Length: 179
Image (cartoon, rainbow, N blue to C red; front, top):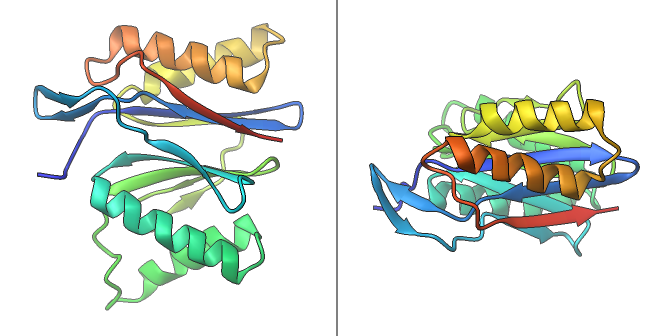
């Protein structure tokens, strides 16, 4: 019963700051279970932000792996996410069937770590995951190209737009920023 689907998480980099935010709705099928879930948090002495979509238990396991790798590699985010991807290459690895994805960022880098072991660094300064991600991506791109809004405000507006169109995304937001 911990497989909670349907969410929107969006990350944006702008002017030396990176923000990641998400809605707070937890659903199971077509039922809202809770409307106040924190899906975005800061880790590693508040220097890294992580947001998740997918199965809660798998997301927390991935959080722990990322935190461990950040400690092991002295905060080197790129190395931390690459090492997670390497674990999926091991056929016997227990993390091969993870049903969660993470957006992970520090002030300089933004990554998507998918449950199948793929790691993506977006070519543009924004990325989104979850059921409302296409709405949030479109909004983020338009706001980045046509306004001078800061990263945190772009994340907020993108999530609010997604919440208007995605039935699995609400307008109770949790947004974190690093600089």
